[in-house]
Length: 387
Image (tube, rainbow, N blue to C red; front, side, top):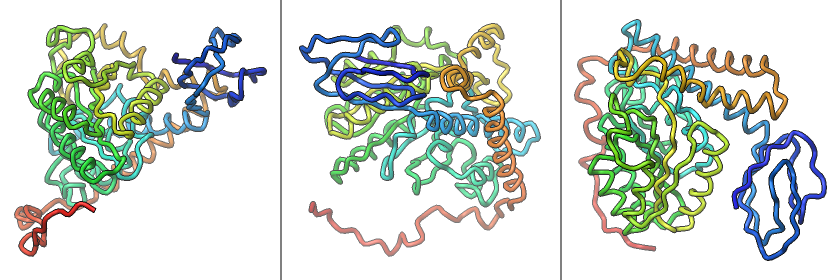
């Protein structure tokens, strides 16, 4: 039984030794026993339980989420401004409207966990801990960028933080994530791979091949579909004949789940539950998070495939706005406090952008660099010996 309790007042006489922290969003699973005692609080029935797993999202945690979500939004808005000035060196695909997914997911990940991303990958990078200045430098084709200015917006990678790379190929990250998960299982760790992809990629052959292999081998990978309703200009309702993409999990004998990707609390809770299962070796999960892309497919998209009224309507579901309302209404945070946080994040983003603008561009002699590892010719191949 799933329980979601929002508390702004101190509760007393909770059954068992269940403790609810004041001003916290309590999210958890209660496994009910045959104990019949029930008590009702805020229209939620809490039963005496054999086992309880409880995640308490404090005000501090939610404010931290709010800060990171604003950081992503500010980065994307600045990326658009750079594109307007013709300072970017490739197409810019922004993550506006999907921030809760990257932040809620990456909040759970630990050292040794990996992610793979998409062409719309700035939010994933930032949530995983990427450096803003190096990201901007890469967008502008500067030598100090993550790929030394040679990759651009769609190819940012940082192995030091577990970011295996964004990908300009639709569905291109799915087999990479599956291979990384195979390596983790081979090494017998409890680390996992999170594979971000869009609804359009769920119709690629790589999606089906990867899910089948991951299922057969019980690989530690969470296939996370960010269903933002539009695959470029193709509405999801015209490309699949099912209500939820997660239903496709049944064909491969794995768990499938669909959640509201604009609700940071739900994202954090449901991903956390899936993550715990996968860490225990139960095999892959197909987790669909429904959201909405508030910006065009790329900067410059005329968006003639959807109406302005549709976009305006869906803006009411903006994850940042929803989190603002939660913090104000349930946690007593003042609007001015949230405005100050958003301003701080915007200032930090602009500072990183301005520094990146001063970085040098690659020179012609740099063209042949980085094609091979520096010690490639000295590599000695040895058979793997299982310890």
